[in-house]
Image (cartoon, rainbow, N blue to C red):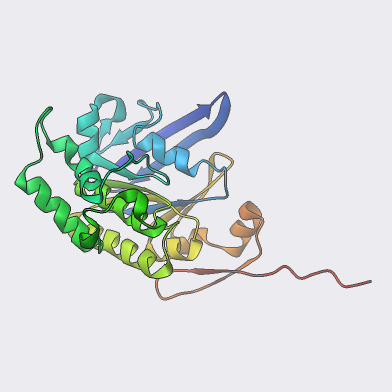
Length: 266
């Protein structure tokens, strides 16, 4: 029986920026419908990995999406397959929320054409799901950081891609909206077969939602496996230089930062 084609397949990915090696020999496969979260200390190469998978950095021979080499996909074809939520997307000045989310429908609109009734219906549905229906006419610049983050996610979901790349998707959200956004993404993954490749700093939240985790350190994969296999006190202490306790939770390991024991006073 032929094994299923991975949604993402990365082989010997090497990325250098300004002559500095960032990723050195990354091998990674993400199954269709899987949620994989990449963690690691600052500068480990997490965002660079997502940008390469999304076609924003040159790596056409090292990345395949659903069996097709990245370099063989035209820009509009790639946009129908993969949608990215970056940490700090560029927003045109003066743009309203509805118009920004409609940009996610561009891969389906003919050149010089206009959005259809179906395109608008998709956008309004996504805005409603993310509790943004009342913000349609607001300019993005007037929104809070958390509200803007939900709008960025709305544009990606409106794109209708089967692979979602999330680069720190909850960094600007309060805890309530963090849970709402991640629950929505997970619901879409389960009901629509969405594949998720994410980076996250909050290790406890990452462990609750990921099927599998990848720990990057110094541009290489230091560990890969289930959250229970990757979120260990020894691995986190070594690669993050952090003092933590890891305790079992109902949906995954919970990582608790702890103060180091001070040396005794002499």
